Image (tube, rainbow, N blue to C red; front, side, top):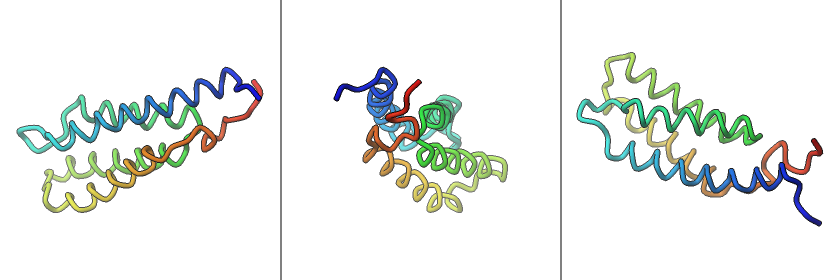
Length: 114
């Protein structure tokens, strides 16, 4: 059975998500001089959130949204990085694990006819 064009796109997006996740992890670990994630780091996270939701990976979308909200809340509250570090690390690791194990069949759009 051959894959539909949509299924091929979803499979390609799995690899793209892995690349974006590697970039996000690298950027976050490097950090900025202020301790706050910079606009580029937040942009990569936002792109992971949006693209995963668009292509049907709702668990990745939810994990990215949760991490994004936590980073925004920590910045809004004066960014006491140590106070948020453990929670941020847990969310980041959860997102990393989801993306590392991602398969096209996990998309809610996989196998659909368009």
